[in-house]
Each structure stands twice: as structure tokens, then as C-alpha cells.
Image 1 (cartoon, rainbow, N blue to C red):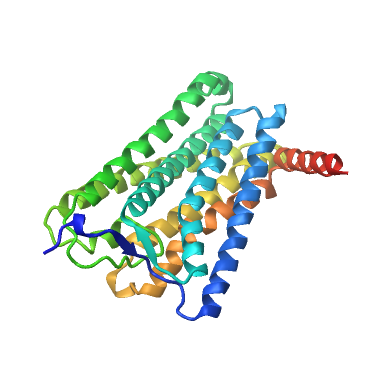
Image 2 (image 1 turned 30 degrees about the vertical axis):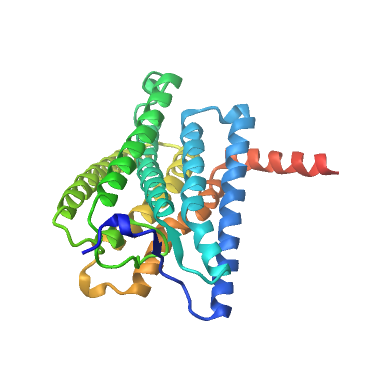
Length: 311
């Protein structure tokens, strides 16, 4: 029985065996990665530069875009590099850092999405108290709590996972270092403590999900009571993008980790993991800018200023 100290590196799951498919994977991931960086970078720049977007909703969207960029940068570049150089290896330390950053950023993003639901609830259901409940100090405190909670969660999971006795090889059945595939390499009953920590994390996530659902039930009830069609359209235009992002993020995460064992297969697990770890950071900017006139105008002005400066 070998300890974790004897493991110097792990072998990640490869997307393809043939050189042509490896290069296809590299270029596909490169396109998605550049789209995520460009889309989120434009949103961050637009919110930072446009004084009309200095509101709580866009402050939290700024945080979401930063987390999206960090989340996709944690997993995709290493996977691209491995495909390009026809290797599967990641160092022991690199695996630990990847697991920590992914858990940290993923949890923080989910909490930010929960806070954004609260922001929309207060804006639509309690507009007279919006300035009081979501003042600048309150927004900073809530964002800091989301980042801090994510950091603590990632740290606890990383310490717990890499303190386990790993004696079933070093092949990770995923394209990046994630907790469930690493737990499969353990032969120690100590992994039960990590499962307990995962249960607590999922319980908190479930609580956030219930809060989001209840918030949107109240939001839609309030929106349907708005007499003017223009008012209803404006309210929906600020809520639908957030609801779409939450649905995409939540459904894929839940399906990936709670699907029946009979439905599990390496290829399906790989596809589902890509859907919640790679796709959302790339499509979130598109979802948020499609129905939001203020954001579209800010992005249009930003792009025009960049083009004119180059000329």
C-alpha cells in the first residue's frame, strides 16, 4: 500500500487518442477559452468604465465575470497543453492547486448567483428599500462573504482530499483534478470525512437553490401585477438572464454528481463536466448582454471607442 507521498504526478483523462482528435480538442477549447476571456473581459471593462452601470446588479455581475474567467482558466489551459503535447500528466502540486482553485471559484460563483437573486428580489418586490438593503457597503460585504466562503470551502476540500491515502494508482477519470475522481483512488476509510464535507457543501448549495426558487416565485408574482407591459418587459429583461445562467449552472452540476450509477460512463461524465465547467463561462456574457439594453449600450460604446482609438 503506497502513500500519497509516493505519487509525484497524476494522469488526467484524455479527450482523444488520435493526434487529429487531440488537435481538434485543442483548437475547440482554445476557441471557447478565448470567447470566455473576451466576453467576460468586455463586461468587466464596460462595468468599470461606464458610470451608468455603477449599481448593485452590475457590481455582482462584475464579480461573476471575474469568477468565470478564473474558473475556466483553472481547467482549460492545462487540458489544452496536454492535448497539444500529447501527454496526460499533471504534477502532484499542480493537481492540488487546480482542485483548490476550481472548488474555491465554483462555490464563490454559486454564492454570487444566489446574491444576485436576492438583488433582483429586493429591486422588484421591495423597491423602496433597495437603497437601504443593497447599499455600497452591504454589497461589498456580501461579495466578500461569497469569496471568503468559497476560499474556505476550497481550502477544506483540498486539505481533506490530499490527506487521504491514495493506493489505487494515479489515473484521474476526469480532464482536470476534481474531488470525486480523486476519492476513487483512496483505499482508506478516512475518505468518509471528505464525503461528509461534500454533503455539507451540497446541503448549503441546496439551501441556496431553495432561496433562489422562492425569490423568483415572489419576483414573478410581483412582475405579473405590474400594470404596464413595458414595465413587465423591463423587469423580465433583468431577471431572465440570471435565471438562465442559474438553470444551466445548477442543472449540469446536479446531474454530474447526483445522476444514478447506471447512467455513469466515462464519455458521459466528460461531456457533463464540460457543460458545467467550460461552457457557462463562455456563454454567460452572451446571456447577460442579449436582453439587457443598458449593458448592450455600454458594450457598444466600449467597442466603438476601442475601434476609433485604433484608427
